[in-house]
Structures are given as structure tokens and as C-alpha cells.
Length: 429
Image (cartoon, rainbow, N blue to C red; front, side, top):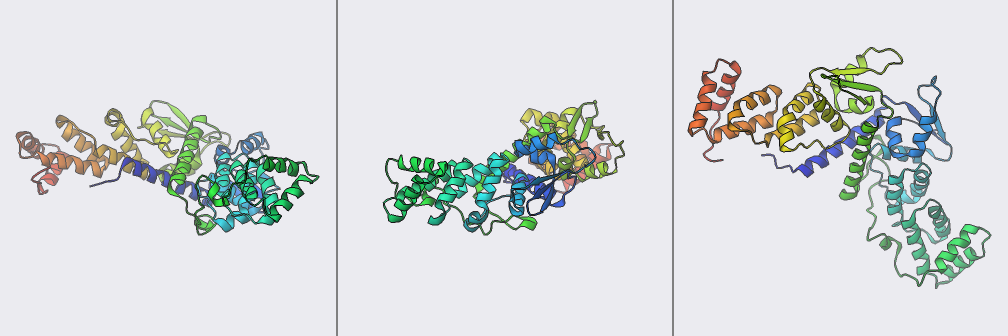
């Protein structure tokens, strides 16, 4: 019996979504933009993914009009190669959770890049992490000024509290004196803020971040060819949920679309090759072989799929939760499962099969539904219906149903009846 809860299933779906986006980043298929760091490092990416996270980069991409160059190169002169890789990887669902050493090395540069390109989710995450890093006394002022410039309020307050903690010491007095007498306006402004504190707060820096102590992950790198990272479960799930929400907005906003799906009734939905091909090898193969004019957007016709099913199919590929209510499951569940099977969207087929297996089917519809799910290959649902039939085979309705199936002229009925009679009936439900 399957004991996976809907929440666990959803978490697993979000994890698979991130894994597929990571694969997209590493395979570099359908890339349409290249970013170049100051050290010459070049990384190919996808306009639609980048635009989800950074309104600054989105504006740059939208302003690009040189149609002769299919993959424009954007030079980010003040970003090093390692920081660029981390910045882009975050946008593709990598868990960018550096350990303490990596944070000291790359955290501030990554925070500054996240701030410059307005990648708000990454900037907020790094601010939470950096406020727990023990900064050397000789670097306090430099780091304080840097985090103040980029608006990392948590880290700024943690550092100010750290300074006020040892203000009574010689080192503390020297630091404040230097800041107060500095010709740098920023130094003097920060000195005023520190002096305005009502009293020193005797806490160490790691204890100032809302009780968060940094988990020392094994590395500051990334998964796949970029290494491995680990994060606390809840923050990571929240990140994945935001990723799914952004992808849903991408589908609805129809920016950077490059393929159109058309249902049997003529309904059309614009989509993105790099997203839909992550889930369906059938769609990927068809699009690879689809012949279109240079300036035309290819149209993928789903002739035997209705508009509602097509929309559910696509929203799943963009990270939406397609858990259907009881009524919607009866109306659209089987059609959605059949479409998922036809286009080899294995994750969706498994999801819908799991939902259908829990559906309450009326007795008069049992055989019709059983035949339909058997044809579609919904194994879980078929077994659930078998179990229900065997549960009441000792009563009159059960015996009559099996007798009808055995004597039927339909080979499918007889085949299912043979499967049923081969089962050892349970004595109780």
C-alpha cells in the first residue's frame, strides 16, 4: 500500500523540478544568451530563466535588438567567474548554501552581485547566512560598509552589535575613533549609528540571526559538476516553492516563448522549448524534427487532447501542483493520465495514477472505469479497482459483475475477468 502523503509527493515533485532545471543548466540545450565574467569565464544560459529572477538582467535582455547574433554575449565586468556561476546556478534551482569558509571567501561578492542585478531571493538568503559568519576584527569596518551599501540589514545589525559588544575595549575605542574622524562620509555615518545604540549587546555574531546558527555544509560549491550542497529542509522547500511559482508566472506571462501548443478544439497556448522538453522526450523529439520557416514559431498539435487537459499538462511542466478535487478528477483525471502516458510525461502519469487510485468509483461504473484505466496503463488505479471488486465478490452484485465479464463477447472483459479469478480473494477489506 502506498503511504506517501500529498505533502511528501509535492515535495518530491518540487525536488524533481529543481533537478530537471539543473540538468538544463548543465546540458546547455536551447541556450540563447551568454554571460561573460571579468576573468573571461563564459556561461550559456536561457533568457526566460534569467528573467524570472532578475528584473535588471531581464531589462538588458529585452533591450537587446541585434538579431544577427543568435546568442548575445553580456559582459559583467565587475563579477568574477566563480560568483557568476553561483549567481546563475541559483536561478536554475541549485542549493547555493556555502559553508562558513566559502561564505568568507565568496559570500560578500555574491551578495553584491545579487544586489546589483536585483536577485532579491538570493540577496535575502545570503543576508541570513552572512549575519552568522564570524568576521575578523581587522575586516569589520570593510565588511560593515559593504553590507550597508547593498542593504543587507540582518548582517549590518549583527556586525554593529558585534562592535558594540567590545566598544569598551581598546580595540573597540580605536575602531570607533577612526570611523568618527574619517574623511569618508560613510564611515562617519556608521559611527553615528553605532554611537546611537542605547547600550552594548553582549552577544556573539552567530547568536544574532534570529537563533539561526549556520549549518556547516561540506562545501561552497554546487551539485553535479559543481560539487554538492546541503541546506535545512524547510528553507530549501520554500526556495523550491518560489521557483515553481516563478515558472508558473513565466507560462502565464508568455515572455520569451518559442513554441505553441494547440489542442483538438483549436485552443493555443504559447510555451518554452527548454521547459517542456525537460519533461517529455516525445515532445523533445517532435520539436527537434519539426520543420518550420525561419521566422515562424513552431506549432505542436495535440489533436486528441482537449483544451483543459492541455492546460493541466503544461502547468505541471511549469511546476504547478495538479492535485485535482474529487469532481475534477472524475471529469478530467483519466484524460490527463492518457495524455501524460502518450507524451511520456512519467512524473505526471504517476501523480495522476496515484490520485485516481483513491477515487471513489460508483458500482455501476466499475467495469467501464476498470477497462479505461487498464487500457491507459494506470496500474495503481487498476489494482485499487481489482481490490474493490474482490472485496464484495461474495455478495450478489460482485458475483453478477464477474459473471458478466466472463460471459462477455468483449475480449478485454474476459481478460480482466481471468485476472480477477486468478487472485486469492481477501476475507476482509
